[in-house]
Length: 193
Image (spheres, rainbow, N blue to C red):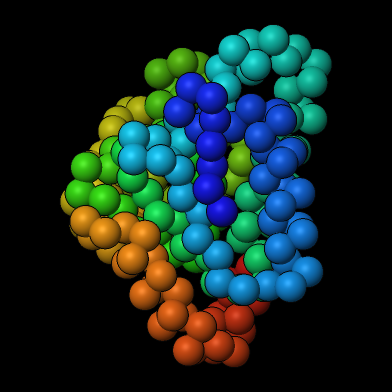
C-alpha cells in the first residue's frame, strides 16, 4: 500500500486517513503480508496542520479517526511492514509504529515534532513508542521534539533494519514473518491483550 498525495508529503489529512482505514479494513478480509510505504522524500509528514487548525470541535472525531486507522494496522491479521524513505514525522511516525516491522533507508528522518507546535499525538504513538524504545527515551523524543536519523532510530530499537533497498528488505522481512506463520499471529494477539 503506497501513501500518495498531490504535494508529495503524504500528509494524513482527514480524507487520506479515511481512505487508508477503508483500505486496511478491506485488505483484512483476505489478509496477506502488507507493506506500507510513501515516496523517496516522505513516508509521511504526519497530520495536515492546516486541517488541525480548522478542526475546532471536530478535533476529537479526527483523533478517533486516526486511532481507528492505527488500530486497524496494529491488529491487521497478517504481518505489516513500514518501508520508510525520507521523512517519517508526527502521525506518519504513529503509522510506522503501528506496523509490526519498520525498515528504513539510511537517509530517513524520524520525529514527533508536535511538542514544538504545542501538540501531542492522539493516535497511539505515546503508547507504542515507549514499548519499543523505553519510557524515558520516548518521553525525551516527545518533549524535545527532536529528529532522529535512521541509524539512531535503529540503535534505540525504533526500526528493525536500515537498508538501501528498503522495499526489498521489507519484502524479505515479511517472507520470514510469513514463514513463522502462527507464531507471529499468536505473538501479535498476546502483545495486544
